[in-house]
Image 1 (cartoon, rainbow, N blue to C red):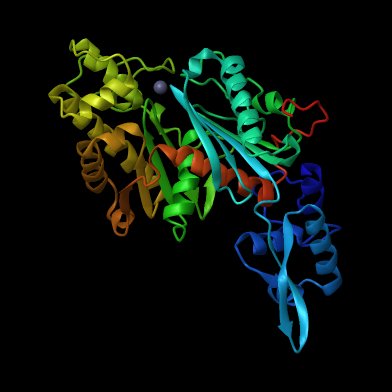
Image 2 (cartoon, helix red, strand yellow; image 1 turned 60 degrees about the horizontal axis):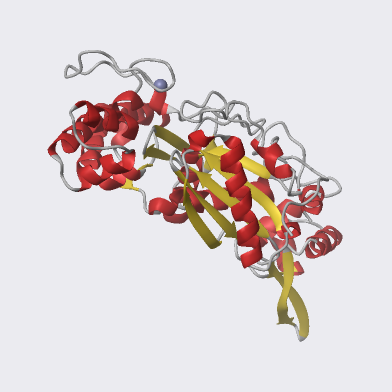
Length: 419
Ligand SMILES: [Zn+2]
């Protein structure tokens, strides 16, 4: 089924996010599919009016979309006494599988073709266990979720994996990830192509969150900055309505920007990336945990640090306030550079602490240019712990149906892992 999707609707281009084609043997297919994906129910005459495509082209394209089950007949509408058949996107015509892999745990989900999550499961596992163990667990959960829905692997038209590290857009490989021991250059798409004949999209967690927040909570916003303050610090950019990954996928990695040493620190801290003085070496959850432990506070994990923050522990609150100033200054630089309309602050630390949020907000207003802050909204993330997986599901749906072929896609003929 996925090979049909690839062949029918998309073109090869040097950018993964080029607009859909309007000419050639399959031209217009993506354009027509986008109309139906937006929720419209249309007759062929209405499709012609909206696309300007010829009637014969529309007949061919809708026939091929019906073959793929991506579009389905949706009753008849009476036009001048004769019923005209109308069509709609068939969100139940297949499945998407997604896994949002975090530093200490993951969420794995089964979605319909609109990116709506049908079933999900949360697991605790450190990403440092390495790709074989972590992806093995993801694969097992995929099989379980499919079986739970009485669905076959053949019904899967796209897989999405988000990870807490930098991802090379071209290959889908994680590149020098500071916290993902053993994952450097690991072929994540290749791992899943052993069992599924469909595109595998790999992206960093902050990109998935940025896309989800924009799609769900700020659909009218064209320029959005998502900052995730969790175990580490990262960001995702939506530029002119589209996810901005940069030339190689490294855009938005603000956690490893150098920040000037604050007066209250004697020595610049070493970061997990090997540099010193990175933003997240002061303000990431792991750094706050390190500082709490140095003060003799009983905390073994970032979750413990978050609990202490929630309970108002004085040391934790003081560290979070210090962190908020540095985060705010770093975000202010990004605001000056990027001029977003909305800045979304998310991640488990941001969610735990009003001080952190308020401190970031005041630092951004203090440090950014008046033109950049004139209309800016700085808001909290709305999707909570599900932000990553919701965004990832929508990102996979978008990638599979309108942005293909992504360079990391792997056609396969290998045996299936699930049955
Ligand atoms: Zn660093």
